[in-house]
Length: 450
Image 1: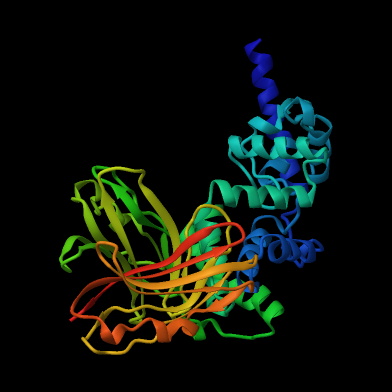
Image 2 (image 1 turned 90 degrees about the vertical axis):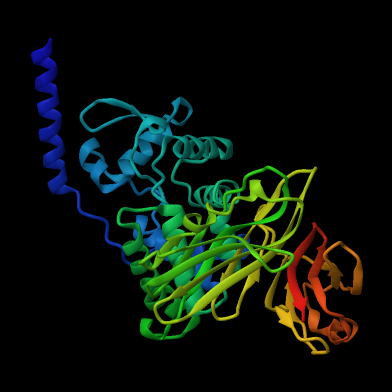
């Protein structure tokens, strides 16, 4: 019996080795599925060109945008072509994807640790969910619209930091680089992740971005640095912990990454600086030193910033409160160094946001300040409110407008928000917007008048 099993194992290895010679590696040339993929990303997911290009370069690298693509290594091990594997799994769809390999062994789609599909889904849980999606749609496992919907489901459910970044990147070459690199780092996570992310960011520029924007830009001319999908506090219940994750990504080596919690007097309660030393850094390396559970009740400012070796700096600041009751609330944001910042909360795919915002920092008494920023949504807006408030919640100045458009420039309300008449003290600048689906605080910035 043991000898027979040993012989079978030797035969299987020999067959796999023979198959490895006859199965060619996938050629990542232009895919016939590209128009459909691009259309889904821009129409269904509402991504701009840059974000779509960033996603597509990853799908191209992973699978050639082929929804029936089986990881090359397993073509050899299973002695099956992509088409043979796909047909056999689809035939056994209601039996956990039951199929037979080329040498007769029975296996199951839900328990194979091999990459499959446009994203090369590998983990058991993800493959099980992909199979359920196919069954619920009554389609084969390689159905492209089903796989694109499944990708979108994953981004909304399990990878909100990636979706926040994709929704936030500016429609520029820099945006295409950041979208490609972050999708690689946070969603695909291939071997040699940092180096691969750099390569995919650069290929997004020279490939898809060039094709869809008509711009031919040298990578040396692109200056990308962003805080991607970072977590920030909105309200903390006293004694509760919060882990601040996300990534800082650039196309130059990141020199430093800093996170701080500043109290209402301007004192840094917690501060941590780390040295990523590469083009990708985890925000948790500094964010985990922010001990929110030790804070007393009151108003605070959470600040995260990063600087690269070329001297570029990206930063984000968010006011939050610590209270004795209620739930701890947090959100996700995206910001890039060139000022095209997006302030996004991270609960789902909502497109309600503000772009090109200008916010007050520390002002001299009597100094004028002109607010800027365009509120945007994928559905009609209802109301936009801009205000200056004291740290205990009292209103100093507030202006509200009703609109039925999908965009609104807050600069239209500038005459009713009088920074120059504020006495010395600490204040909160807040922009709140309501569309047909929800109400959201887009900016909550603490600033001082000296």
